[in-house]
Image 1 (cartoon, rainbow, N blue to C red):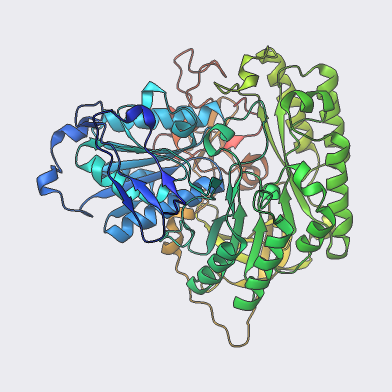
Image 2 (tube, rainbow, N blue to C red):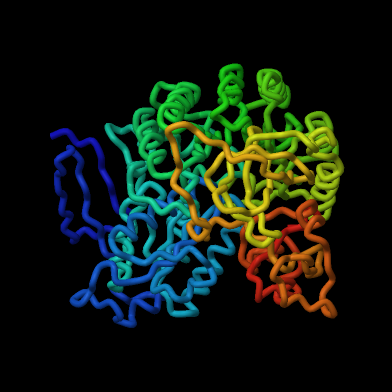
Length: 611
Protein backbone atom coordinates (compact mmCIF):
# COMPACT_ATOMS: atom_id res chain seq x y z
CA UNK A 1 0.00 0.00 0.00
CA UNK A 2 1.39 3.36 -1.03
CA UNK A 3 0.65 5.86 1.71
CA UNK A 4 1.23 9.26 0.16
CA UNK A 5 -0.71 11.65 2.40
CA UNK A 6 -1.32 11.45 6.12
CA UNK A 7 -3.51 13.94 7.94
CA UNK A 8 -3.37 13.84 11.75
CA UNK A 9 -5.35 15.41 14.50
CA UNK A 10 -3.27 16.93 17.29
CA UNK A 11 -1.50 14.18 19.19
CA UNK A 12 -2.32 15.82 22.53
CA UNK A 13 -6.02 15.48 21.68
CA UNK A 14 -5.86 11.70 21.18
CA UNK A 15 -6.64 9.25 23.98
CA UNK A 16 -5.25 5.74 24.16
CA UNK A 17 -8.71 4.27 24.36
CA UNK A 18 -9.89 6.10 21.25
CA UNK A 19 -10.41 3.84 18.27
CA UNK A 20 -8.70 5.37 15.25
CA UNK A 21 -10.60 4.61 12.11
CA UNK A 22 -8.32 4.71 9.08
CA UNK A 23 -9.84 4.71 5.64
CA UNK A 24 -7.81 4.21 2.48
CA UNK A 25 -8.89 6.51 -0.32
CA UNK A 26 -8.88 5.72 -4.02
CA UNK A 27 -6.02 8.14 -4.56
CA UNK A 28 -3.75 6.23 -2.21
CA UNK A 29 -4.10 8.51 0.80
CA UNK A 30 -5.01 7.72 4.37
CA UNK A 31 -7.23 9.86 6.56
CA UNK A 32 -7.38 9.67 10.35
CA UNK A 33 -10.87 10.53 11.52
CA UNK A 34 -11.13 13.58 13.78
CA UNK A 35 -11.38 13.28 17.54
CA UNK A 36 -14.19 15.31 19.05
CA UNK A 37 -12.67 17.08 22.03
CA UNK A 38 -15.84 17.81 23.94
CA UNK A 39 -19.55 18.19 23.48
CA UNK A 40 -20.95 21.64 24.26
CA UNK A 41 -19.05 21.90 27.54
CA UNK A 42 -16.90 24.92 26.80
CA UNK A 43 -16.81 28.70 26.84
CA UNK A 44 -18.30 28.78 23.36
CA UNK A 45 -21.64 29.35 25.00
CA UNK A 46 -23.90 29.14 22.01
CA UNK A 47 -23.00 25.46 21.63
CA UNK A 48 -25.02 24.80 24.74
CA UNK A 49 -28.09 26.54 23.33
CA UNK A 50 -28.96 23.30 21.54
CA UNK A 51 -30.05 25.36 18.53
CA UNK A 52 -28.54 22.76 16.20
CA UNK A 53 -28.75 19.48 18.15
CA UNK A 54 -27.09 16.56 16.36
CA UNK A 55 -30.30 14.58 15.92
CA UNK A 56 -32.03 17.50 14.18
CA UNK A 57 -29.04 19.12 12.48
CA UNK A 58 -29.71 20.33 8.91
CA UNK A 59 -26.52 21.06 6.88
CA UNK A 60 -26.47 24.45 5.19
CA UNK A 61 -29.10 25.94 7.47
CA UNK A 62 -27.03 28.71 9.05
CA UNK A 63 -25.41 32.08 8.34
CA UNK A 64 -21.61 32.37 8.57
CA UNK A 65 -19.67 35.62 9.02
CA UNK A 66 -16.14 35.42 7.58
CA UNK A 67 -13.46 37.87 8.67
CA UNK A 68 -9.82 37.83 7.61
CA UNK A 69 -6.75 39.70 8.82
CA UNK A 70 -3.34 40.01 7.21
CA UNK A 71 -1.84 39.16 3.86
CA UNK A 72 -3.35 38.30 0.51
CA UNK A 73 -2.63 34.61 1.17
CA UNK A 74 -4.90 34.79 4.20
CA UNK A 75 -7.57 36.56 2.15
CA UNK A 76 -7.38 33.82 -0.47
CA UNK A 77 -7.80 31.16 2.23
CA UNK A 78 -10.90 32.97 3.50
CA UNK A 79 -12.36 33.14 -0.01
CA UNK A 80 -11.83 29.40 -0.45
CA UNK A 81 -13.44 28.58 2.90
CA UNK A 82 -16.37 30.86 2.10
CA UNK A 83 -16.79 29.15 -1.27
CA UNK A 84 -16.88 25.70 0.28
CA UNK A 85 -19.45 26.79 2.85
CA UNK A 86 -21.66 28.45 0.25
CA UNK A 87 -21.50 25.35 -1.93
CA UNK A 88 -22.83 23.43 1.07
CA UNK A 89 -25.75 25.87 1.28
CA UNK A 90 -24.64 28.28 4.00
CA UNK A 91 -25.26 32.00 3.71
CA UNK A 92 -21.99 33.95 3.79
CA UNK A 93 -21.50 37.45 5.23
CA UNK A 94 -18.31 39.47 4.77
CA UNK A 95 -19.66 42.86 5.89
CA UNK A 96 -18.81 43.60 9.52
CA UNK A 97 -21.98 45.70 9.84
CA UNK A 98 -24.06 42.50 9.41
CA UNK A 99 -21.99 40.14 11.52
CA UNK A 100 -24.47 39.96 14.39
CA UNK A 101 -26.96 38.38 11.99
CA UNK A 102 -24.68 35.33 11.74
CA UNK A 103 -24.97 32.07 13.67
CA UNK A 104 -21.22 31.46 13.56
CA UNK A 105 -18.11 33.58 13.01
CA UNK A 106 -15.18 32.16 11.05
CA UNK A 107 -12.16 34.26 12.09
CA UNK A 108 -9.01 33.90 9.97
CA UNK A 109 -6.11 35.44 11.89
CA UNK A 110 -2.70 37.04 11.23
CA UNK A 111 0.29 36.67 13.55
CA UNK A 112 2.64 39.28 12.05
CA UNK A 113 2.02 42.02 14.64
CA UNK A 114 0.61 42.32 18.13
CA UNK A 115 -2.29 44.64 17.16
CA UNK A 116 -3.64 42.26 14.52
CA UNK A 117 -3.53 39.37 16.98
CA UNK A 118 -5.15 41.50 19.67
CA UNK A 119 -8.06 42.47 17.43
CA UNK A 120 -8.50 38.78 16.62
CA UNK A 121 -8.67 37.98 20.35
CA UNK A 122 -11.03 40.92 20.90
CA UNK A 123 -13.35 39.57 18.20
CA UNK A 124 -13.42 36.16 19.88
CA UNK A 125 -14.46 37.82 23.13
CA UNK A 126 -17.01 39.89 21.24
CA UNK A 127 -18.59 36.76 19.80
CA UNK A 128 -18.65 35.13 23.22
CA UNK A 129 -20.32 38.19 24.71
CA UNK A 130 -23.05 38.02 22.03
CA UNK A 131 -23.46 34.25 22.43
CA UNK A 132 -22.24 33.52 18.89
CA UNK A 133 -20.37 30.36 17.88
CA UNK A 134 -16.77 30.74 16.70
CA UNK A 135 -14.37 28.79 14.49
CA UNK A 136 -10.75 29.92 14.52
CA UNK A 137 -8.40 29.79 11.53
CA UNK A 138 -5.15 31.28 10.31
CA UNK A 139 -1.67 31.82 11.63
CA UNK A 140 -2.34 32.82 15.26
CA UNK A 141 -3.71 29.48 16.58
CA UNK A 142 -1.51 27.55 14.14
CA UNK A 143 1.66 29.17 15.51
CA UNK A 144 0.62 28.77 19.17
CA UNK A 145 -1.29 25.51 19.22
CA UNK A 146 -0.92 24.94 22.96
CA UNK A 147 -2.27 28.36 23.89
CA UNK A 148 -5.12 27.79 26.35
CA UNK A 149 -7.09 30.67 24.82
CA UNK A 150 -7.98 28.48 21.81
CA UNK A 151 -8.89 25.34 23.75
CA UNK A 152 -12.66 26.01 23.93
CA UNK A 153 -12.92 26.59 20.17
CA UNK A 154 -12.78 24.64 16.94
CA UNK A 155 -9.66 25.37 14.89
CA UNK A 156 -8.78 24.98 11.20
CA UNK A 157 -5.08 24.79 10.38
CA UNK A 158 -3.59 26.81 7.53
CA UNK A 159 -3.19 23.68 5.38
CA UNK A 160 -6.59 22.23 6.26
CA UNK A 161 -8.93 24.89 4.88
CA UNK A 162 -10.67 22.36 2.63
CA UNK A 163 -12.13 20.77 5.78
CA UNK A 164 -13.94 23.93 6.84
CA UNK A 165 -17.42 22.50 6.20
CA UNK A 166 -16.76 19.57 8.52
CA UNK A 167 -15.40 21.83 11.24
CA UNK A 168 -18.23 24.35 10.97
CA UNK A 169 -20.91 21.67 11.04
CA UNK A 170 -19.44 19.93 14.07
CA UNK A 171 -19.26 23.31 15.81
CA UNK A 172 -22.90 24.05 14.97
CA UNK A 173 -23.77 20.69 16.54
CA UNK A 174 -22.04 21.75 19.75
CA UNK A 175 -18.74 19.92 19.28
CA UNK A 176 -15.18 21.23 19.26
CA UNK A 177 -12.85 19.92 16.58
CA UNK A 178 -9.44 20.86 15.24
CA UNK A 179 -7.28 20.05 12.22
CA UNK A 180 -3.76 21.43 12.54
CA UNK A 181 -1.23 19.17 10.82
CA UNK A 182 0.60 20.04 7.61
CA UNK A 183 0.05 18.07 4.44
CA UNK A 184 2.79 15.86 3.02
CA UNK A 185 3.16 13.39 0.17
CA UNK A 186 6.06 10.96 0.35
CA UNK A 187 7.46 13.13 3.17
CA UNK A 188 7.41 16.19 0.88
CA UNK A 189 5.41 19.15 2.17
CA UNK A 190 2.61 20.19 -0.17
CA UNK A 191 1.42 23.70 -1.00
CA UNK A 192 -1.89 23.13 0.72
CA UNK A 193 -5.50 22.58 -0.33
CA UNK A 194 -6.46 22.07 -3.97
CA UNK A 195 -6.43 25.35 -5.92
CA UNK A 196 -9.61 24.37 -7.76
CA UNK A 197 -11.81 24.45 -4.68
CA UNK A 198 -14.96 26.60 -4.88
CA UNK A 199 -14.30 30.21 -3.99
CA UNK A 200 -16.17 33.42 -3.21
CA UNK A 201 -14.01 36.31 -4.36
CA UNK A 202 -14.58 39.47 -2.38
CA UNK A 203 -13.88 41.18 -5.67
CA UNK A 204 -14.98 39.00 -8.62
CA UNK A 205 -12.50 40.78 -10.88
CA UNK A 206 -9.42 39.85 -8.83
CA UNK A 207 -8.13 36.34 -8.20
CA UNK A 208 -5.51 35.67 -5.52
CA UNK A 209 -3.50 32.53 -6.28
CA UNK A 210 -1.25 31.15 -3.52
CA UNK A 211 1.71 29.53 -5.27
CA UNK A 212 3.29 28.11 -2.11
CA UNK A 213 3.10 28.19 1.65
CA UNK A 214 5.83 28.72 4.20
CA UNK A 215 9.33 30.02 3.55
CA UNK A 216 13.05 29.25 3.80
CA UNK A 217 13.95 32.09 6.17
CA UNK A 218 14.51 32.09 9.92
CA UNK A 219 13.89 35.79 10.66
CA UNK A 220 14.24 36.37 14.38
CA UNK A 221 11.24 38.72 14.62
CA UNK A 222 8.77 36.72 12.53
CA UNK A 223 6.19 34.29 13.89
CA UNK A 224 4.69 33.40 10.52
CA UNK A 225 7.26 30.63 10.03
CA UNK A 226 5.89 28.92 13.13
CA UNK A 227 2.44 28.94 11.49
CA UNK A 228 3.13 28.35 7.81
CA UNK A 229 6.24 26.23 8.30
CA UNK A 230 8.87 25.35 5.72
CA UNK A 231 8.43 26.01 2.02
CA UNK A 232 5.85 23.93 0.21
CA UNK A 233 5.24 24.80 -3.46
CA UNK A 234 2.34 23.93 -5.73
CA UNK A 235 3.33 22.34 -9.08
CA UNK A 236 3.53 24.76 -12.02
CA UNK A 237 0.90 22.75 -13.88
CA UNK A 238 -1.65 23.15 -11.08
CA UNK A 239 -1.13 26.92 -10.90
CA UNK A 240 -1.36 27.35 -14.67
CA UNK A 241 -4.58 25.34 -14.79
CA UNK A 242 -6.00 27.61 -12.11
CA UNK A 243 -5.06 30.66 -14.17
CA UNK A 244 -6.81 29.25 -17.24
CA UNK A 245 -9.98 28.35 -15.35
CA UNK A 246 -10.46 31.65 -13.52
CA UNK A 247 -9.93 33.73 -16.68
CA UNK A 248 -13.13 32.14 -17.95
CA UNK A 249 -14.96 33.40 -14.86
CA UNK A 250 -14.63 37.14 -15.46
CA UNK A 251 -11.34 37.66 -13.60
CA UNK A 252 -9.16 40.38 -15.15
CA UNK A 253 -6.41 40.72 -12.53
CA UNK A 254 -4.38 37.90 -10.98
CA UNK A 255 -2.30 38.28 -7.83
CA UNK A 256 0.48 35.73 -7.33
CA UNK A 257 0.99 35.44 -3.59
CA UNK A 258 3.05 33.56 -1.03
CA UNK A 259 4.99 34.19 2.17
CA UNK A 260 7.98 34.61 -0.18
CA UNK A 261 7.25 34.55 -3.90
CA UNK A 262 10.93 34.55 -4.86
CA UNK A 263 11.59 31.28 -3.04
CA UNK A 264 8.91 29.46 -5.06
CA UNK A 265 9.93 26.09 -6.45
CA UNK A 266 13.24 25.62 -4.66
CA UNK A 267 11.72 22.63 -2.87
CA UNK A 268 10.48 21.00 -6.09
CA UNK A 269 13.34 21.81 -8.44
CA UNK A 270 11.89 24.75 -10.39
CA UNK A 271 12.19 28.55 -10.10
CA UNK A 272 9.90 31.54 -9.82
CA UNK A 273 10.82 32.69 -13.34
CA UNK A 274 9.85 29.26 -14.71
CA UNK A 275 6.42 29.72 -13.15
CA UNK A 276 5.91 33.35 -14.12
CA UNK A 277 6.67 32.79 -17.80
CA UNK A 278 4.16 29.93 -17.87
CA UNK A 279 1.54 32.08 -16.14
CA UNK A 280 2.13 34.97 -18.57
CA UNK A 281 1.75 32.56 -21.48
CA UNK A 282 -1.53 31.25 -20.07
CA UNK A 283 -2.87 34.79 -19.60
CA UNK A 284 -1.96 35.78 -23.16
CA UNK A 285 -3.61 32.69 -24.60
CA UNK A 286 -6.82 32.97 -22.60
CA UNK A 287 -7.61 36.68 -22.20
CA UNK A 288 -6.94 39.78 -24.32
CA UNK A 289 -5.94 42.16 -21.52
CA UNK A 290 -5.90 40.50 -18.07
CA UNK A 291 -2.94 41.51 -15.89
CA UNK A 292 -0.62 39.77 -13.45
CA UNK A 293 0.63 41.27 -10.19
CA UNK A 294 3.69 39.67 -8.60
CA UNK A 295 3.67 39.47 -4.79
CA UNK A 296 6.28 40.00 -2.09
CA UNK A 297 9.75 38.52 -2.46
CA UNK A 298 12.72 38.67 -0.14
CA UNK A 299 16.03 39.83 -1.68
CA UNK A 300 18.11 36.61 -1.46
CA UNK A 301 15.86 34.53 -3.69
CA UNK A 302 15.36 37.07 -6.43
CA UNK A 303 19.03 38.06 -6.66
CA UNK A 304 20.03 35.22 -8.96
CA UNK A 305 16.97 35.80 -11.19
CA UNK A 306 17.00 39.59 -11.20
CA UNK A 307 17.70 40.08 -14.93
CA UNK A 308 14.98 37.65 -15.91
CA UNK A 309 12.60 39.23 -13.40
CA UNK A 310 13.18 42.60 -15.05
CA UNK A 311 12.12 41.07 -18.37
CA UNK A 312 8.98 39.62 -16.78
CA UNK A 313 8.07 42.93 -15.13
CA UNK A 314 8.55 44.63 -18.52
CA UNK A 315 6.00 42.36 -20.16
CA UNK A 316 2.81 44.24 -21.15
CA UNK A 317 0.61 41.72 -19.32
CA UNK A 318 2.50 42.10 -16.02
CA UNK A 319 2.33 45.11 -13.71
CA UNK A 320 5.79 46.70 -13.36
CA UNK A 321 5.46 46.42 -9.60
CA UNK A 322 7.16 44.34 -6.93
CA UNK A 323 7.35 44.38 -3.14
CA UNK A 324 10.84 43.75 -1.71
CA UNK A 325 11.12 44.31 2.06
CA UNK A 326 14.50 45.62 3.23
CA UNK A 327 13.56 46.11 6.94
CA UNK A 328 16.79 47.98 7.81
CA UNK A 329 19.61 49.85 6.09
CA UNK A 330 22.22 48.43 8.44
CA UNK A 331 24.06 45.18 7.79
CA UNK A 332 24.57 44.63 11.51
CA UNK A 333 20.81 44.87 12.18
CA UNK A 334 20.04 42.63 9.20
CA UNK A 335 22.48 40.11 10.66
CA UNK A 336 20.65 40.11 14.01
CA UNK A 337 17.38 39.76 12.09
CA UNK A 338 18.89 36.80 10.15
CA UNK A 339 17.74 38.28 6.86
CA UNK A 340 20.38 36.47 4.73
CA UNK A 341 21.44 39.46 2.61
CA UNK A 342 23.46 42.65 2.83
CA UNK A 343 22.40 46.17 1.94
CA UNK A 344 24.66 46.06 -1.13
CA UNK A 345 22.85 42.92 -2.31
CA UNK A 346 19.50 44.61 -1.75
CA UNK A 347 20.66 47.65 -3.73
CA UNK A 348 21.88 45.38 -6.50
CA UNK A 349 18.36 43.97 -6.84
CA UNK A 350 16.75 47.44 -6.80
CA UNK A 351 19.05 48.99 -9.38
CA UNK A 352 19.08 45.92 -11.61
CA UNK A 353 15.27 45.98 -11.73
CA UNK A 354 15.21 49.72 -12.40
CA UNK A 355 17.84 49.44 -15.13
CA UNK A 356 16.18 46.39 -16.66
CA UNK A 357 12.83 48.15 -16.98
CA UNK A 358 14.08 51.47 -18.37
CA UNK A 359 12.55 50.80 -21.80
CA UNK A 360 9.04 50.78 -20.31
CA UNK A 361 9.65 53.71 -17.97
CA UNK A 362 10.84 51.87 -14.87
CA UNK A 363 9.29 49.80 -12.09
CA UNK A 364 7.44 50.53 -8.84
CA UNK A 365 9.31 48.99 -5.92
CA UNK A 366 7.63 48.89 -2.52
CA UNK A 367 9.56 48.11 0.64
CA UNK A 368 9.17 47.68 4.40
CA UNK A 369 11.06 49.30 7.28
CA UNK A 370 11.11 48.20 10.93
CA UNK A 371 12.06 51.01 13.31
CA UNK A 372 13.66 50.24 16.66
CA UNK A 373 14.62 46.60 16.17
CA UNK A 374 16.67 45.35 19.17
CA UNK A 375 20.36 46.24 18.75
CA UNK A 376 19.53 49.15 16.39
CA UNK A 377 21.82 52.06 17.30
CA UNK A 378 21.50 55.64 16.14
CA UNK A 379 24.20 54.90 13.57
CA UNK A 380 22.21 51.90 12.31
CA UNK A 381 19.09 54.03 11.98
CA UNK A 382 20.98 56.71 10.05
CA UNK A 383 22.04 54.03 7.57
CA UNK A 384 18.36 53.26 7.06
CA UNK A 385 17.71 56.96 6.50
CA UNK A 386 20.59 57.04 3.98
CA UNK A 387 19.02 54.14 2.10
CA UNK A 388 15.68 55.96 2.00
CA UNK A 389 17.34 59.15 0.75
CA UNK A 390 19.17 57.22 -1.93
CA UNK A 391 16.34 55.04 -3.21
CA UNK A 392 13.29 57.24 -2.45
CA UNK A 393 10.84 54.37 -2.65
CA UNK A 394 7.35 55.39 -3.87
CA UNK A 395 5.73 52.98 -1.39
CA UNK A 396 7.19 52.33 2.06
CA UNK A 397 5.48 50.46 4.88
CA UNK A 398 6.95 51.85 8.09
CA UNK A 399 6.33 50.09 11.39
CA UNK A 400 7.72 50.05 14.89
CA UNK A 401 9.20 46.83 16.19
CA UNK A 402 6.65 44.49 17.78
CA UNK A 403 8.10 41.65 19.93
CA UNK A 404 6.17 38.54 18.97
CA UNK A 405 5.96 35.94 21.75
CA UNK A 406 8.00 32.85 21.01
CA UNK A 407 10.41 34.55 18.61
CA UNK A 408 14.13 35.05 19.34
CA UNK A 409 13.71 38.83 18.99
CA UNK A 410 11.19 38.87 21.84
CA UNK A 411 13.98 37.87 24.23
CA UNK A 412 16.34 40.63 23.04
CA UNK A 413 16.84 43.92 24.85
CA UNK A 414 14.40 46.44 23.42
CA UNK A 415 15.16 49.95 22.27
CA UNK A 416 13.32 52.43 24.53
CA UNK A 417 9.82 53.20 23.26
CA UNK A 418 10.41 56.95 23.05
CA UNK A 419 13.43 56.44 20.79
CA UNK A 420 11.51 54.01 18.58
CA UNK A 421 8.67 56.49 18.15
CA UNK A 422 11.06 59.32 17.32
CA UNK A 423 12.75 57.21 14.66
CA UNK A 424 9.41 56.20 13.23
CA UNK A 425 8.34 59.87 13.02
CA UNK A 426 11.63 60.89 11.43
CA UNK A 427 11.54 58.30 8.66
CA UNK A 428 7.83 58.90 8.06
CA UNK A 429 8.39 62.64 7.80
CA UNK A 430 11.10 62.07 5.22
CA UNK A 431 8.95 59.65 3.25
CA UNK A 432 6.14 62.21 3.10
CA UNK A 433 8.53 65.01 2.14
CA UNK A 434 9.16 63.93 -1.44
CA UNK A 435 6.69 63.61 -4.28
CA UNK A 436 5.83 60.31 -5.84
CA UNK A 437 5.03 61.88 -9.20
CA UNK A 438 6.55 64.87 -10.98
CA UNK A 439 4.60 67.66 -12.66
CA UNK A 440 5.35 66.12 -16.06
CA UNK A 441 2.81 63.38 -15.42
CA UNK A 442 -0.08 65.86 -15.63
CA UNK A 443 -1.65 65.70 -19.08
CA UNK A 444 -0.15 62.34 -20.02
CA UNK A 445 -2.37 59.61 -21.45
CA UNK A 446 -2.22 56.19 -19.85
CA UNK A 447 -4.00 52.86 -20.04
CA UNK A 448 -5.52 51.61 -16.79
CA UNK A 449 -7.42 48.51 -15.68
CA UNK A 450 -10.46 49.46 -13.57
CA UNK A 451 -11.17 46.93 -10.83
CA UNK A 452 -12.56 48.60 -7.71
CA UNK A 453 -15.08 51.08 -6.35
CA UNK A 454 -14.06 54.01 -4.17
CA UNK A 455 -17.55 54.63 -2.92
CA UNK A 456 -17.14 57.51 -0.51
CA UNK A 457 -14.85 59.82 -2.41
CA UNK A 458 -16.92 61.76 -4.92
CA UNK A 459 -18.10 58.87 -7.10
CA UNK A 460 -14.75 57.43 -8.12
CA UNK A 461 -13.56 54.11 -9.50
CA UNK A 462 -10.09 52.73 -8.81
CA UNK A 463 -7.84 51.58 -11.63
CA UNK A 464 -4.14 50.85 -11.97
CA UNK A 465 -1.71 51.78 -14.72
CA UNK A 466 1.22 49.74 -15.97
CA UNK A 467 3.26 50.55 -12.86
CA UNK A 468 0.40 49.67 -10.50
CA UNK A 469 -0.08 53.31 -9.57
CA UNK A 470 -3.57 53.96 -8.24
CA UNK A 471 -5.57 56.04 -10.72
CA UNK A 472 -8.99 57.40 -9.66
CA UNK A 473 -11.54 58.10 -12.38
CA UNK A 474 -15.15 59.35 -12.30
CA UNK A 475 -17.67 56.58 -11.83
CA UNK A 476 -19.62 55.74 -14.95
CA UNK A 477 -21.38 52.69 -16.30
CA UNK A 478 -19.36 50.16 -18.25
CA UNK A 479 -15.90 50.79 -16.75
CA UNK A 480 -15.55 48.04 -14.15
CA UNK A 481 -13.32 45.24 -15.37
CA UNK A 482 -12.33 47.18 -18.49
CA UNK A 483 -9.14 48.66 -19.88
CA UNK A 484 -9.46 52.41 -20.38
CA UNK A 485 -7.32 55.15 -21.84
CA UNK A 486 -7.25 58.12 -19.47
CA UNK A 487 -5.71 61.58 -19.29
CA UNK A 488 -4.05 62.36 -15.96
CA UNK A 489 -5.50 65.54 -14.48
CA UNK A 490 -4.24 65.53 -10.88
CA UNK A 491 -1.62 63.94 -8.68
CA UNK A 492 -1.09 63.29 -4.98
CA UNK A 493 1.33 61.34 -2.83
CA UNK A 494 -0.65 58.11 -3.09
CA UNK A 495 -2.85 58.55 -6.15
CA UNK A 496 -3.40 59.96 -9.61
CA UNK A 497 -6.71 61.21 -10.94
CA UNK A 498 -7.71 60.82 -14.56
CA UNK A 499 -10.33 61.65 -17.16
CA UNK A 500 -11.58 58.70 -19.17
CA UNK A 501 -10.96 59.21 -22.89
CA UNK A 502 -11.87 55.79 -24.19
CA UNK A 503 -12.91 52.29 -23.11
CA UNK A 504 -10.65 49.97 -25.09
CA UNK A 505 -12.27 47.33 -27.28
CA UNK A 506 -10.85 43.94 -28.17
CA UNK A 507 -11.94 42.16 -31.33
CA UNK A 508 -13.92 39.00 -30.69
CA UNK A 509 -14.05 39.59 -26.94
CA UNK A 510 -16.67 41.19 -24.75
CA UNK A 511 -16.15 40.84 -21.01
CA UNK A 512 -19.30 40.32 -18.96
CA UNK A 513 -20.51 43.59 -17.48
CA UNK A 514 -19.85 43.91 -13.76
CA UNK A 515 -22.36 45.67 -11.56
CA UNK A 516 -21.21 47.62 -8.52
CA UNK A 517 -23.12 45.42 -6.09
CA UNK A 518 -20.82 42.56 -7.05
CA UNK A 519 -17.90 44.56 -5.65
CA UNK A 520 -19.67 45.46 -2.44
CA UNK A 521 -17.19 43.61 -0.25
CA UNK A 522 -14.14 45.14 -1.93
CA UNK A 523 -14.96 48.84 -1.83
CA UNK A 524 -12.26 51.18 -0.69
CA UNK A 525 -14.35 53.35 1.50
CA UNK A 526 -13.44 56.91 2.44
CA UNK A 527 -15.04 57.50 5.84
CA UNK A 528 -16.76 60.63 7.08
CA UNK A 529 -14.31 60.83 9.97
CA UNK A 530 -10.58 60.24 10.31
CA UNK A 531 -8.19 60.36 13.23
CA UNK A 532 -5.56 63.07 12.86
CA UNK A 533 -3.07 62.89 15.69
CA UNK A 534 -5.30 62.34 18.74
CA UNK A 535 -8.33 64.14 17.33
CA UNK A 536 -11.27 62.95 15.27
CA UNK A 537 -11.89 65.18 12.25
CA UNK A 538 -14.42 64.94 9.44
CA UNK A 539 -13.87 64.95 5.71
CA UNK A 540 -16.00 67.57 4.01
CA UNK A 541 -17.35 67.63 0.45
CA UNK A 542 -18.49 64.02 0.43
CA UNK A 543 -21.42 63.75 -1.93
CA UNK A 544 -24.64 62.77 -0.24
CA UNK A 545 -23.23 63.44 3.22
CA UNK A 546 -26.00 65.12 5.14
CA UNK A 547 -24.98 64.05 8.63
CA UNK A 548 -21.81 66.05 9.19
CA UNK A 549 -22.32 68.48 12.06
CA UNK A 550 -20.24 71.51 11.09
CA UNK A 551 -20.54 73.04 14.54
CA UNK A 552 -19.09 70.04 16.36
CA UNK A 553 -16.48 68.81 13.88
CA UNK A 554 -13.13 69.96 12.57
CA UNK A 555 -12.97 69.55 8.80
CA UNK A 556 -10.30 68.63 6.30
CA UNK A 557 -10.76 68.55 2.54
CA UNK A 558 -11.17 65.35 0.55
CA UNK A 559 -7.98 66.22 -1.33
CA UNK A 560 -6.06 66.56 1.95
CA UNK A 561 -7.38 63.20 3.10
CA UNK A 562 -6.24 61.54 -0.13
CA UNK A 563 -2.80 63.12 0.12
CA UNK A 564 -2.11 62.59 3.81
CA UNK A 565 -3.86 59.41 4.87
CA UNK A 566 -3.66 55.72 4.08
CA UNK A 567 -6.85 53.86 3.30
CA UNK A 568 -6.80 50.52 5.13
CA UNK A 569 -10.13 48.89 5.79
CA UNK A 570 -10.52 48.41 9.51
CA UNK A 571 -13.03 48.40 12.30
CA UNK A 572 -13.12 51.15 14.87
CA UNK A 573 -11.56 48.93 17.51
CA UNK A 574 -8.50 48.32 15.35
CA UNK A 575 -7.16 51.88 15.37
CA UNK A 576 -4.49 53.39 17.57
CA UNK A 577 -2.72 50.47 19.25
CA UNK A 578 -5.50 47.98 18.55
CA UNK A 579 -6.07 47.49 22.25
CA UNK A 580 -2.45 46.58 22.89
CA UNK A 581 -1.53 48.70 25.89
CA UNK A 582 2.19 48.07 25.63
CA UNK A 583 2.52 50.09 22.43
CA UNK A 584 0.72 53.28 23.42
CA UNK A 585 -0.74 55.10 26.39
CA UNK A 586 -4.34 55.60 25.26
CA UNK A 587 -5.66 52.26 26.54
CA UNK A 588 -3.50 52.36 29.65
CA UNK A 589 -5.36 55.54 30.53
CA UNK A 590 -8.67 53.85 29.67
CA UNK A 591 -9.27 56.50 27.04
CA UNK A 592 -10.91 55.10 23.90
CA UNK A 593 -9.81 57.58 21.27
CA UNK A 594 -12.24 56.26 18.66
CA UNK A 595 -15.60 56.32 20.40
CA UNK A 596 -16.94 59.30 18.45
CA UNK A 597 -16.32 57.41 15.20
CA UNK A 598 -18.61 54.56 16.20
CA UNK A 599 -21.34 55.43 13.69
CA UNK A 600 -19.07 55.32 10.63
CA UNK A 601 -17.25 52.08 11.48
CA UNK A 602 -14.41 53.33 9.24
CA UNK A 603 -11.16 55.09 10.02
CA UNK A 604 -8.04 56.32 8.27
CA UNK A 605 -4.66 56.23 9.89
CA UNK A 606 -2.42 59.29 9.60
CA UNK A 607 1.13 58.21 8.86
CA UNK A 608 2.33 60.47 11.66
CA UNK A 609 0.30 58.65 14.28
CA UNK A 610 2.12 56.47 16.77
CA UNK A 611 0.42 53.19 15.96
